[in-house]
Amino acid sequence: MAFVERADARIYWDSLGKGEPVVLIMGLGCSSAMWFRIAPKLARTHRVILLDNRGSGRTQVRHSLVHRVPTMAADVAAVLDAAGEASAHVIGFSMGGMIAQQFAIDFPKRLRSLSLLGTHPGGTWAIQASSRVRQLLFEKATMSAEESLRRMRPHTYGLHTPDALFEEDALVRLANQPSARDYQAQLYGLIYWAAYPHLPDITTQTLVIHGLQDALIPPENGRLIASRLPNATLVEMAEASHWLMTDCNADCLQALRQHLEKNQA
Picture 1 (tube, rainbow, N blue to C red):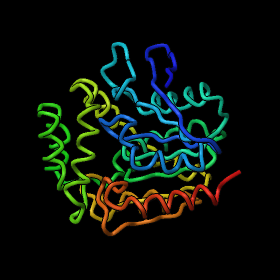
Picture 2: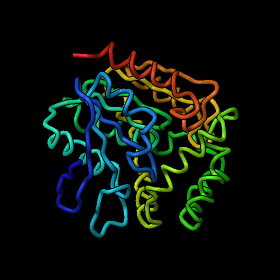
Picture 3: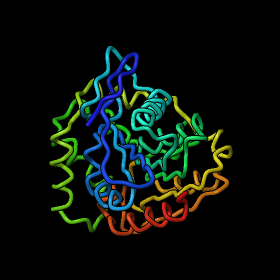
């Protein structure tokens, strides 16, 4: 457990395992603890580096109303510096996938491979969720933490995902819940962000994984990203929604492991 001191923030990070470095970047309103279904298993063969984005977990930010994606991508680079790694495989989920895209644009020489899970390319090019789901994203800041998770469940978990798995995720999220202000600061940081025009410039081997039941970030986004990247492999999971690491954990891990093995130094 360690912290990176930046001008306006204290970024929490940690690592586990040994081997080629892999950075995991989590999504909106979630701390790095939500990689609990992925990180320990990847750490059997890799050095897994975790960080809490601005507005999440143990990271502390001073006087910021908006957590911007380029700033969070620079936080990832700072964590790599602190970890003593010149480059890494980068895996991003949801908002973390947006940060990962920005990292690939801003720090291409520090990227060994890229994996984008349940994310979109930003701006007017992104295929949006229904108006009701988008409204829920903004209403979450005014709900209790437990109510917001249960209201979002039909839009973010697979139809056949057991209640027990959802409850496990919920317990981890409730133990690491951001403040309403920090959640909104992350959400506002996504509004004017876009990587779409720059995707053809990302030549790194990229794995794009998307759940076909995803109602929060519709699966057309995964296809769009993969079509824009010169070296992309698209994997779609019929039984998965947004939280594909929970819905289809074994399939998700298999795809990630194959991608990492294929692109090892």
